[in-house]
Length: 434
Ligand SMILES: NC(=O)c1ccc[n+]([C@@H]2O[C@H](COP(=O)([O-])OP(=O)(O)OC[C@H]3O[C@@H](n4cnc5c(N)ncnc54)[C@H](OP(=O)(O)O)[C@@H]3O)[C@@H](O)[C@H]2O)c1
Image (tube, rainbow, N blue to C red; front, side, top):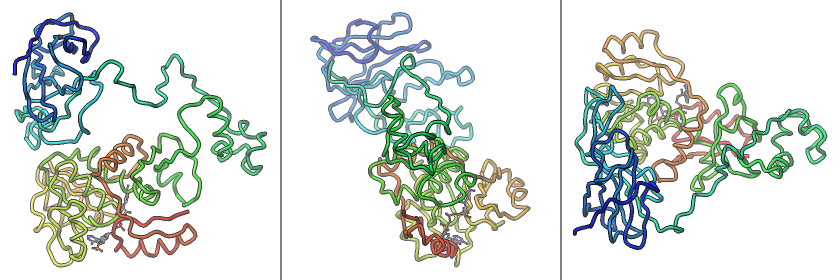
């Protein structure tokens, strides 16, 4: 198929259809060559690659005759690969137009998307020649008027008022707030106060929004209760696909898994990750997060739970009651130890490996043993994390993370829940309901 490409216009940026075709414009200061890649309707096959010939200032542009709304497209951009100077141009990677008005699928991490070679000893200084087009979402040309900005407050800064208030004075004389709560932080969180704030035009919260989260643990969150006040950044909206029970089971264990595997270990596709107690509260979520990052997951549990482990994404289940875990696991890149106490696991690591010790108890000389092998040892304490919660809720929405709630107890039976939890045999999470 041939396409007629002419110079087009540098503005507006993005893809703009007109009566004759579509204008494409993209800005890059350091690019040396920009190619527009057109795809078939399924976004699967590249049907044309057109080099944008025109450059006005830093904007590369071209007009393609006959291209209409609905066309799938992306870019390949050539330029220096010089990470020391901040340049990582790699034309093997298809890029989404930063001004795209729609994309044809959800973004999913895949090893081809990395600009470096996952697992390469040079790390992100290596250069991947794997073509990413099959895994990358394609931008879609939208007709003028067809595109509506997503809803949400998105209040411009010049129109934004930050409303600071004195917590005590705010509800002290509000008769709609129960007397015992007037003048307290609980009074501020009472629906009558929220109603007042929303009535004033405060846009970043609304009464009745379903949210989930983890206040600072174990400080503020050192008890169970029906109500809690905490900074809004310690919560995020509950995804509709998550029940309240599942949402109750996700934050502490899920953030522990996320902060270990993503923020601390930065697990890469192809790495081997050993998770002990992989059927438990943290373990079953950690297995799914590691699997979603493209790792090979090795998990320990008694044999009766191996079916569950596989459902969480564990590739190699090990029965710690009958097998030598370190021997069965072989060499791994990351150990997430949720049991503690086993010095033996250090044997699984080599230079560059990472041992994350999660329970507070660990043998004194474990760190030394790990470090003697050229690996790193770290302890870990979970913390409130809006970004992490948001990432977890996205995984849930994408169907890539499931919270296994094995039992629920009413709040008044919290002691019974503890007795069950302390058996150390829990599968997934135990949740209290109110
Ligand atoms: N530092 C932090 O920020 C942080 C955050 C969260 C949790 N934690 C800690 O992390 C640990 C794990 O928490 P969790 O909530 O996931 O625990 P959990 O749900 O109580 O773990 C239960 C699981 O542990 C398994 N298990 C028990 N003994 C085992 C052993 N010797 N080897 C392998 N698996 C074993 C059980 O499987 P089987 O029945 O098959 O044995 C069970 O499925 C706890 O010590 C907790 O306090 C720390």
